Amino acid sequence: MTRETWKGLAIGFGAGLLAPLVLPAVVRATRPTVDAAIRAGLGAWERGREAVAEFGEYAEDMMAEARARQEGGPAMGGQVMPAAGGEAGSA
Image (cartoon, rainbow, N blue to C red; front, side):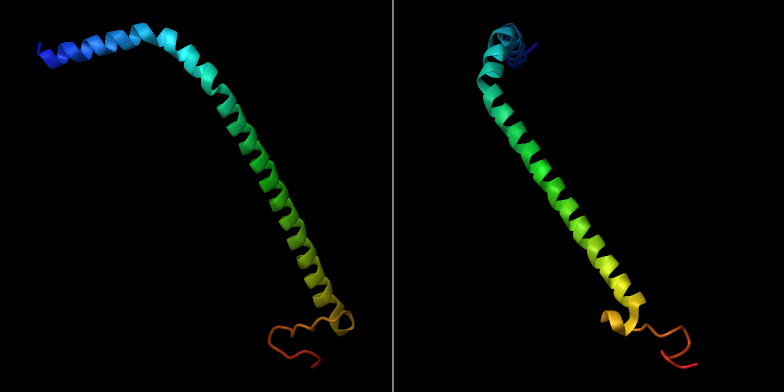
């Protein structure tokens, strides 16, 4: 084996021995940051869901209003759509 191989094995072995000592400290140190990031993400998710729901309600209202105008004719402020193959009002 070459010198580089031994060096890599020594580093890997040392990291394996130190991991149980270092990882708990890293987890303790980063936990508040990870917690804050998750809470911020959940808040953004909720705000996004609310915005999509509001837009859906707006779109439904606009569709219902358009249908009412189309079906109600000129009295509702809408336009009478011509029948297929003919003009509106012709018999």
